[in-house]
Image (cartoon, rainbow, N blue to C red; front, side, top):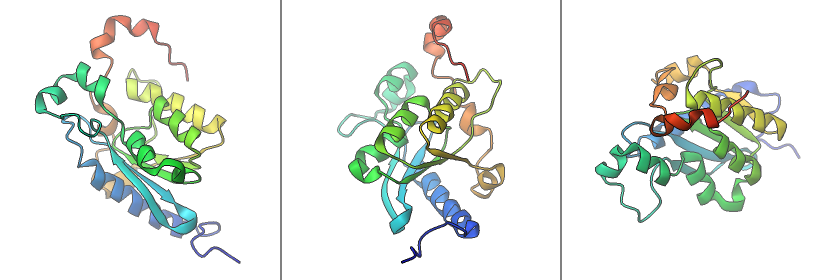
Length: 193
């Protein structure tokens, strides 16, 4: 029996649903209280055409997300959960064989590790740029390398798709570098694509 929800041989159907899920991820990203970066993620089981979980970047449940904490970049970075992490925690085992749609930043290396280990089959997100000094681009390139090695498909969000969502193409990567407070130790971190 053929799965009527399958995208195989139907790229126009996949493109349509990719746009919808990216739009939903963008909408969910606005729930974040982080004043510098708003990231949203949607985990989808394509086989059953079912949204499994959503997530946005923020502090853990029952941890106060005061403006003071959110403005203190060093403290915030030690406490915040990424959108992908939140979605995976909500999905649990149901994340296996899902696609994840991420809007707001490229997927980082830590989130890529968790997505791989959770059994996600496809990641749709902004592609990091090569040859920049941006922390998010560097860890994003490492994430893509890991995803490919693990056999997880990566689909870059096109500039046209970002335009349709009303998102600035470079805004996701232009957020302040989280290493600023640790700048003097940056030489200890090696990010080779």
